[in-house]
Amino acid sequence: MTAETENALGLALADARLEGQPIDPGAVAAAGDWPPADAETAERIGEIATQAMGEPVAGWKIGATSPEAQAIMGCDGPFLGPLFAPRIHADGTTIPYAPGTLGVECEFAFRIGTKQPTGKADYDATSVAALVMSCHPALEIVGRRTRGDAFPGVTEAIADFALNVAFVHGPAIMDWQDVDLGAAEVRGLVDGQQTNAGHGRNVLGHPLNALAWLANALALRGNGLRPGDWVSTGTCLGVVPAAAGTTVSGDYGPLGRVAVTFEG
Image (cartoon, rainbow, N blue to C red; front, side):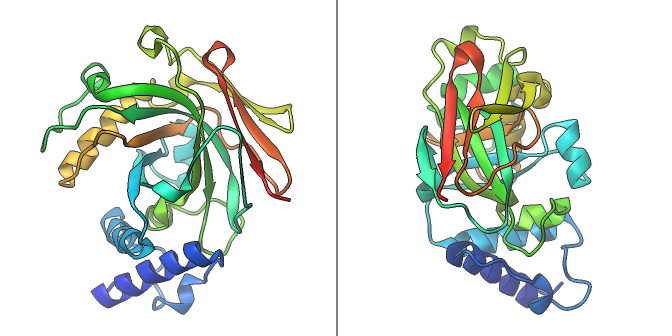
């Protein structure tokens, strides 16, 4: 794929997100250029799209952190994407139902309180916890800017903002360091009716493992976590179906609850 095509695809994906109109990448790229051939190409397209959005990046999402998600995406490990500040919301928010929405994921999110030292790429679950200011129940709305009703393959997902649509965080979990997040049960509900259930251990064994992966991956890309960043660590229970006019909730038992309502 030429640099010119990468640029055109990145700009088209940003326009599709800003305008809420899914696109046909085949109308932009030459035959055989979409989906991207590898993760490196997909990341370059995604970086162009991120710059073209013109919105500040206020955190990161991690995709494919569970075997179920990896099977759906056709990959054997996680990937990352940006969270844009205007698309981060507090519990109980009402947002438009974006075209291309695929569903809602119930996740554990971390708020970063300490800057990651430049180049440090050897974090594990224990050491990365020192960067964390707070832990929250959270929802990630996922979707695509390209035409289609199913989850795309991993390279298409990486290029397309890692499939992020919006992010909703609940109240901070009190004394989260004393909680076994891996053992925590999480339930997904639509209009109060349970649709899915899972545990924190579905996220690379523990949400802090996902955070450590992200910190190391960012460092290898010349980036890093900063104070105030939000990090959504991946779904605990698959994907909760969503539709216009519904309310999707994540019930984390004694750890809290978080909800989002989609405009009808």
